[in-house]
Length: 217
Ligand code: 5RP
Picture 1: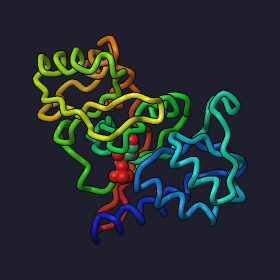
Picture 2: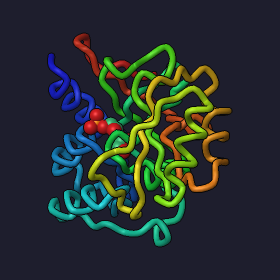
Picture 3: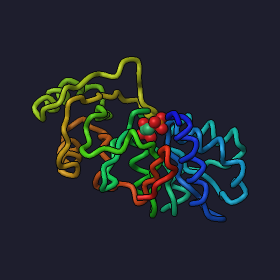
Picture 4: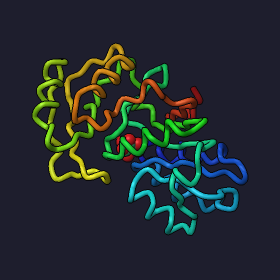
């Protein structure tokens, strides 16, 4: 199976987690697009969706599913999203699509975070995928300097502005041995809005799609 086929399979498997009458959080990225394209079959169960990006909002509304704000929903029973990497503790790197801040807010506001990946994203140590950091533009060079001190190689994401009006630095070359400590350290740099480490609030369930089917971790 190629990666798109694996994404489709894992998106299909996620449908079983949606219960009647739920308001669910939905993330961003191509795995989530595959999920949204399958929501038709469970649409009657979904009370509303809280969305993590403008694109997700548009796609969900096109399916004629109601999208509401987090301030209206309060705590959510379920959040479904993809990731760029996961380790065996279900600690993640996210933000390849640049929606990390809203994704982290929703993950943190959800009782269950169901994460969908294909097996190429399951790693022993996080960091092969460049760590995205959403940064207020004014602090770009200062945050970049701090990341160099931490052993990384920050790269400005060209022609990209987040839904919150900020820039992204993608930090290459980090071998992330202590994800929680690094997540906190980066968040403490003035000008950092969010970093793409989801370690303090990782996933509760991880569905990994491979040639042999779906593994639930
Ligand atoms: C977006 C994300 C995505 O979940 C992550 O980048 C995975 O994307 P894809 O499903 O396209 O591989 O964090 O900010």
